Length: 71
Image (cartoon, rainbow, N blue to C red; front, side, top):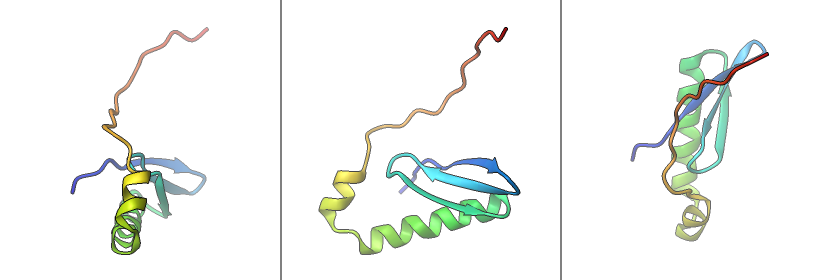
């Protein structure tokens, strides 16, 4: 299954988020944050009931950029 991973720098590390399921993780590097999120997602799918998966799963997620005027 392919899911979205949004990773951003926070302090000295990185935070990763899967918006489809509202599951997050973190790591010291981008790769570490991605790998930890992947592990968290796999554990979620191994332990969650079908009802919980359905309840948490959002529809389509679109990630894009917007340009805004500042000042």
